[in-house]
Image (cartoon, one colour):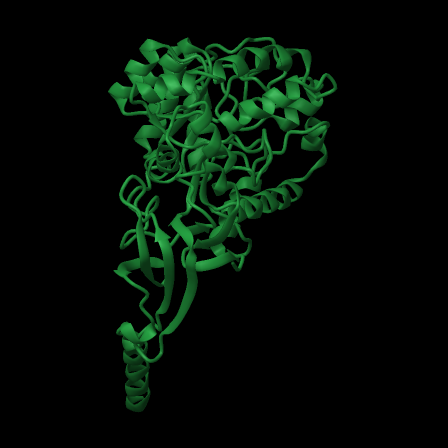
Length: 441
């Protein structure tokens, strides 16, 4: 018995004193934008340990320059001819959605497992485009998006770090209720746990998403362009319902993203305490005042409006009469409203609404923020990195290449500060120290 105890204690001591072998990476960056908004530097070495940034050194250091244990591993990545910067962040995607002709029918035909597989494909496409983190702001199936997020976190599938809302909080018959045009027997099966009417139901709907481990809450404060309804683009929830949703989410530690097009709905959501406004198409001076006063973010999704332009120009597109009428209104406003908000000092985070448009083309949004938002290339990059991280409450972990943050790093051939479209062709993608894409020079 005594021998057994000694042996057991020795095993316990050995396990407690075992030193983990660290994984080191060194990136030789020819040009480095470590913190968007700050100076660009040349010939730098970004040093990572176990997937996080350990530090940055001048010149090109090698393994002999580091003090590491013999059991540690080290890998050097040669990006001497490239422009290196933090991984991109998209604040508005729908990984399990792909709007196209016949998409509504697929919602009935596809199982949650089928939808998760589709989401996994979209997640991979998004990561290969340089987006190492995304915020998914609503799914119509019960479990698929949670499976995609958890599968990525577990390393079973390849994709960006994904924060999910679960089901959209929406009114019966409103934007986010996906049962439009389906007969009642089918609609009853399709209706999600996010559909609610009245204060009590709205509180329960929020709590249900949090029970399912939603990272944040998404609500539809106004009607939407792509719902097949002639309800226009203005406010849907009453003020007491909005307050119930946002107060419940805040009480349970969740940030709230509010889909809103019309000014009355935007303002009502901001007054109720929404952290971000998705789209914000018809914002007015009162909206801007509330944005600035509340330090809230605008997620403009200009890529979705570009998709709308192409669909409007195609008389045979899948748009219904209701969708076409609303798209015509929204596309006109998209030319100017982001610039107005930007010039007034509103916080703006890059957001695409991928799912309405194609997944994997997310970096097009940088170009659109410059074209329609009046941003400089550096300001657009900030919107897709630091502001993107702040928008999802993860600025301490993401958005820049600084010690202690995750090793989410991308590279391109050329200088995006001279030509922002270069960001649409990334040559190197690293997430948490793992290289997922590296196209040789």
